Image (cartoon, rainbow, N blue to C red; front, side, top):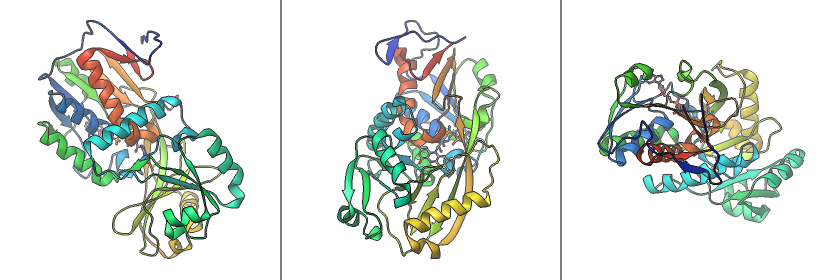
Length: 354
Ligand SMILES: Cc1cc2nc3c(=O)[nH]c(=O)nc-3n(C[C@H](O)[C@H](O)[C@H](O)COP(=O)(O)OP(=O)(O)OC[C@H]3O[C@@H](n4cnc5c(N)ncnc54)[C@H](O)[C@@H]3O)c2cc1C
């Protein structure tokens, strides 16, 4: 049975929480994806003795986090998400900046082809914190797009990370902060919790034994390589079915993402590949000559309301439901968990206590 007491603020304190533990105490985090990595780093920095158990190897190719775009875009995401995502997302931007000061915050650009004008207007109505750009301003910002769009929305405060680079960086930081990560090592969080220490379950879609209502939402993506196009920030292209985008990576690579399909099959369909590649081609015809490097799909861990949840069962805490916002939300969720464990602070919007 869960209880959440009402509060005028998003947070309240609980006194005498059974599982509040002092710095120096042992904490085991299960799963080293973006959720687990931020939990581990935040607890290690708060002075806890942290151990991370991850069943994959250090390349993490089976984690959902491996397939992500890594966009830190709380204002663009207002299109499809609740205000709590904006609240936690904007807090996370500060935490990314503090922990990894090299994180690029070059903003995001949103463009539309004339046939998708109505979608563009709708996007502009339900999002905030953007500037409207005309053709000249777009050319200045992204010279590769010169002459291709008459109008764009520019979200100047958004950022992005490269998940396959940033996860190892976070893992390294955990080790530097005194934490231990065991790759190729599997465990059942329930059994660990029965031994007494605090356990934080960050297994995402693989936590179904404990988080009965988690489901996978398939996100397909394609990585291409070309030196004919150069972008400095993620560019979203209006699309009637999905928010499609092209994100610049290192070495002239671009990630084209992402579909959002209620399916736990993690293969890429021909239809999705056609749509993703067409979106890139329509953004710039030079993508037609790009080399395809990889096609892949990840399963976003989603709860019925598509919102994140920190569920507290005594000395076991489940952090799940990061859905399409894992990179955007993980730092703020970790901060909330630390605040709960150290000070008994409850965030009414995302925490549930047994
Ligand atoms: C195509 C795509 C694009 C996306 N783009 C973005 C984006 O631009 N911005 C954004 O914020 N989010 C994005 N997301 C969402 C984001 O990727 C997810 O929300 C996030 O990766 C979920 O992270 P997680 O740590 O909960 O799960 P995971 O990354 O799956 O990590 C869970 C880990 O637990 C491990 N594990 C499982 N069972 C055990 C066990 N018994 N013992 C030990 N370890 C175990 C697994 O091996 C895995 O490494 C995207 C997702 C997809 C698929």
